[in-house]
Length: 447
Image 1 (spheres, one colour):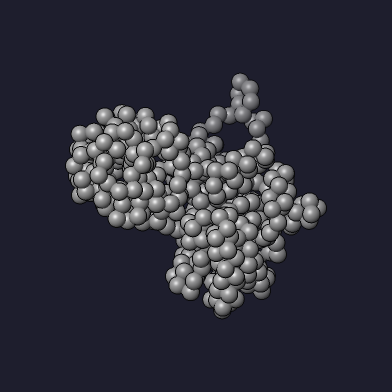
Image 2: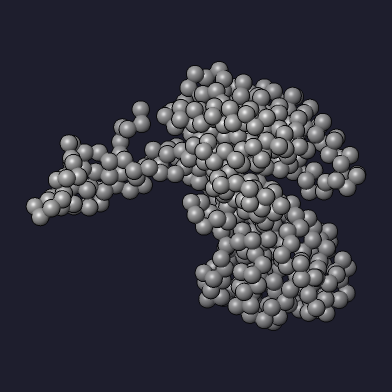
């Protein structure tokens, strides 16, 4: 099996070199072929997903998986049409990320330096549960000129296989899209195989729980981009508008509780807690949220149903379910300190009408997305106008936050001269560099 994985990675490497030289028109033709093929094969996809759902229901009954995972697994006709196929075409409609001039400098007369965007190369993606992520990730990689090796969760085995085979067949009809640009891994052992291929795979993106991400980070030399947890916070400041605060807290928790940008902890300033809890606690419990509160929260909301004491581990737990830990704090500084200690650096929000408190929070909270008077659920590539995303990154290098097309390219330097040699710039009489910024990009170098 190790030899098979290495052979697939070598094919992907060759495919990536070809893709990096394709035009946007050629890559968009591949994306349109995929969109059409997914539509034409809808019955095959839906039947495959029904098989996966039936198996997952049995696993749920045996306590082997959770309900949020089943919700992520489901692909119905509406989701296929309005999200997956529309998503493919939305990727095609985005601006070509390849060949953009990020900086241009005249080194000397006739000697120019350009920094231009290029694909990363071969990307390995390990994801759990959501089969729609397979299409989203694959099409983003194709648009950005990268080859991709994908390993989905076993619970979506039939759906992943069906959609991968459909995409392969769709692009095989196009001479410009190389064979091997996408490869689906199906065995658990294959993940360990790709983690060893640091000479063939350029980037690993894990999409799953903390255990998966930590395992990958600890077992590969390949750079890893992603986030381990989505421990997101909403802080209700003493100068919050109560109506806004209640709406934002509820939306952040319940709009889609299984999402990585759903709030897991609610922090409330002591001066506003009684008034806020009078409305918010009941509305949260009406939505089915179980609340785990600190001692002061338990005291102020003692009459509420579904209220239990929070333990120390609750502050660092990603529930991905209708559970919310709640704590009362005495200042914005205490809220910031709590978030920076327990947050996964994903997304955190402050609700306040005090602009200085908001400014302090936005500057001091060390997360990929920080928000003022807005739900944490806005932390999303589509909602940010970035289109589809391969995931959320909490890294501090290359890409951070929702990672779309721009996060799937890197850059290289291109120097154009006219017989220039370095030796002319050495010594007492050597020429000097101008290092003048240019206002034009590098044109005509990509087909």
